[in-house]
Amino acid sequence: MSVAPRPGSDAATDRRTAAAGDPLAGAGFEDAPVALAITDSTGNWVRVNRMLCELLGHTAEELLGTSYRALTLPEDLAADDAATEAMLAAGGRGEPVEKRLRHADGRLLWVRVTATLLRDAEGLPWGAIAGIEDIDARRLRDAELARLALHDPLTGVRNRALLDDDIDAALQARDRDGGVVAVCYLDVDDFKDVNDRYGHEVGDFLLVVLATRLRDVRRETDTVARLGGDEFALVAHLPDADAAERLRQRVERACAEPLVMTGLTVPLAVSVGITVIDRPGHTAADVLAAADTAMYQLKRQRRDAPSTPTPPDPMGRGTAG
Image (cartoon, rainbow, N blue to C red; front, side):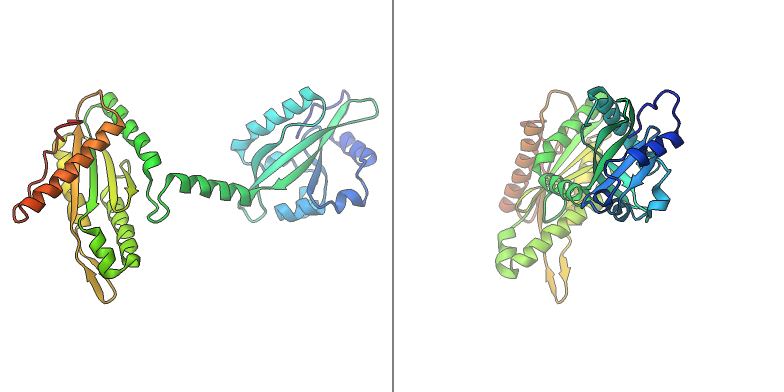
C-alpha cells in the first residue's frame, strides 16, 4: 500500500523511520507464521519477512526497495488503490483486497492482502504493514466449483443451468442482427439397450464421444449443452433456415457414426430435432420445448416408417415456429 508522504519527507527518510520505529523489528516479525511486509509512503517494501520471501520466491534483498506494484498484475492495481484510499479514510486498518502477484518463476499467485496504517510519533502516516495470505488454492477450488455448477461433470459441456442464458443471448443477437436461431435437440435411440448390452462404462464413454463430436461440428460462437441422460442441445445463430437444416444434417451424420473401441464397435442411431426462430417474441423455454417436440416427432416417424425416415419441418412448426 502506498500512502501520502509526510511533509518534507522522502522515501529514504521513510525507510529510516520504518527501521527505527518498527514495533515488529525483532524476531516476531521475521519468524511470524504469516507473510508480512512493511511499505513506506511510496509503496516500496522496507521490511519483509521469511514467509513472504517463500511465498513469492524472492530473496529479501530482491524485494527491499522495490514497489509491491511491480509484482501486482496491472489489472488488479485499481482494487489496490481503492483499498489504500479506504484505509486512509478510515485512518487505520484497511479492507482486505484479493489480487494477483507475480511469483519469481513467472506464475500468477492469488493473495489476500490486509493492511494497517503506520504512523510516526507525531501521528502522521508514513507507511503500512500488510499481511499477505496465500489464497491461490482456494481461488482455484472456487473457480472449479463454479465451473462444475455450470458444466456437465461427465462430458465437460455446458449444463441446463447455462443453456437458457445461451438461447436468450442468441435470440437477442437475432433480434439485433437478423438471421435465425436454430436449436438442435439430440437424443440417442435405444440408449438403455446400449447400457444393458455393453455396460454403463461404455454408455458413459459414448456420451463423452457425442459431446466431442458436437463440439467438433459447432462453430466457435455456437453452444453445446447436455440436458441430462443421453440428451444434448446445440444452439446457433445462423443466416437462414437452410443453414439451420444443413447444421442439423451435419450433427446427425457426425453423431450417428459407430462408436469404435478396442475390440468393440457399437452401432449408433440418433434423433436430431430442430426448431428455427426467425422473428422476435420467443423465450428460451418455448424454443427448447419446440426443439424437444421436433426430436420426438422424428422418433415417431422413424418408428412408424423405419425404411423412409422424414425429418421434421426445420421451421419447428408448433410452439416456437
